Image (cartoon, rainbow, N blue to C red; front, side):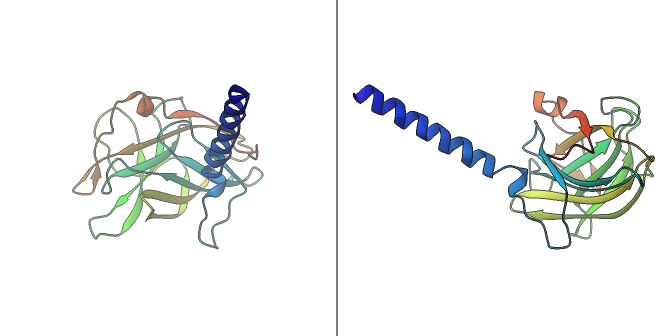
Length: 189
């Protein structure tokens, strides 16, 4: 009898833990009232999530990427790679505290492994903003994708340091190296 009670208690605790962990997922993130997204997904690496609304007919993608940087003065990045499934070729949005102390987002065309340089990317951007909330950086932006795009190769990343306004290299732990995948923009989750 005690064994059955113990098993039932273990099953109940497991169910509660599952519900609690689901409640901490992307759907529990709240944004200011002017930021509403149709879909979200908890990304499998770096304790991060992506929230988006997409109109395939126009190619307008509105997004919020949320991730904790390794250190408060670090950076977070979300990117689309139109040519491959890894970092090189990525058209990146990187959010970090700017030299003036305010949070901001810059664009980077990642052409090689090594130091990054701010510059234009292959997609028209607007509404690039960032904020630091509860230990995480929230990166906001709008991208104009090619008409009819339904899936993209996405890459996301976090780094610990920014020196003189330049994000420095990220860790090379398995979770950093596996922070990539395919995103179905029209599949609502």
